[in-house]
Amino acid sequence: MSLTEIRKIINDSDNIVCLCGLGMNSECGFPDHRVPGEAYDIELKYGHSPEDLFSSLFYTVRTKQFFQYYKNEILCLDREPGAAFYSLAELEKTGKLRATITRSFYSLPQRAGCKKVIELLGSIYKNTCPHCGTEYTVDFVKSASSVPLCPECQKTIRPGVCLYGEMVDNQLTTKSAETISKADVLLVLGTNLKSRLCEQRLKYFNGSKVILINEEEHYSDDLADYVIHDKVNDVLPYLVS
Ligand SMILES: [Zn+2]
Image (cartoon, rainbow, N blue to C red; front, top):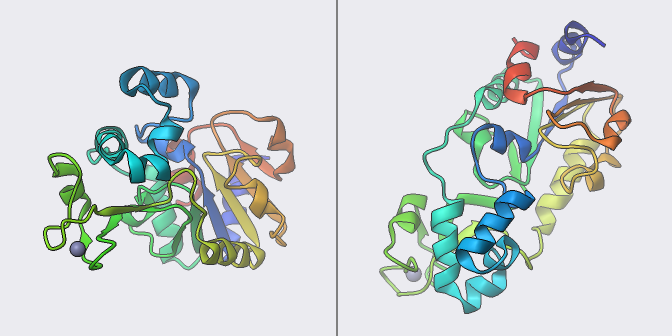
C-alpha cells in the first residue's frame, strides 16, 4: 500500500475519526513516564513511582509532593504541538475529520486549532477550585510557590486531569464509542492497536478502513488495514496536503 493510496482514502472520506496516542506527545518532546527509563529517573528523583506521584491518593494525602511532581514534571508549558496536529485541524476544517479522541491531557489538538476533541483524561488547562468553582489558568497553578490555593477560599485547586485511581468520565467513554461507531475511516496515530486508547474502542468501529501511523512496530499492527511505521509529524502533513 503506497502513501498515495492512503492519501486518496483520506481525501475521499468525509467521516474520519482519529485516535491520537501518546506517541504524538513524545514526538513533540513531552515526557512519557510510562517508559521504564523515564519512570526510573522520576523514582530516583522523588522516591516514588510516577503512578504513585500522579495518584488521587497523593493528591489527597501528600498534596505538596503531588504538586511538586505535577508542576515540575507534568506541566511542561514550553512545548508546542507538532505539524501533525495542524494537519488534524486542517482535516477538521474541511469537514473530513469528525472527532479526535485522546488520553493525552495537554490539549495539543485544540492548541493547533481542532475543536472536536474528546479528552478522555481531561486537560491541564482546566483547573477549578472544588469549593467555589472558580477556574484558574495553568500558569496560575504552575507559578504557585507550593500547593496552588484558591485565593478566595484557600482550598487546593484541582487540576482537571484524571489521576491514577480515578475513573475515566463515563459520559466521555460513551461519547467516544458512539463517535467511533459512526466513522468510515479510523486514523490511529502514535499508538498501537492494543493500547489502552485503542483496544477497548476498536470493537465499536463499523467502518471499513483502519489506518495506523506509528513509529514503533507492534505485533498487533496486522489488525490495521494500512500501516505506516514513521513519525506522525513527518507523514500526516503529506497525507492531508
Ligand atoms: Zn475557591
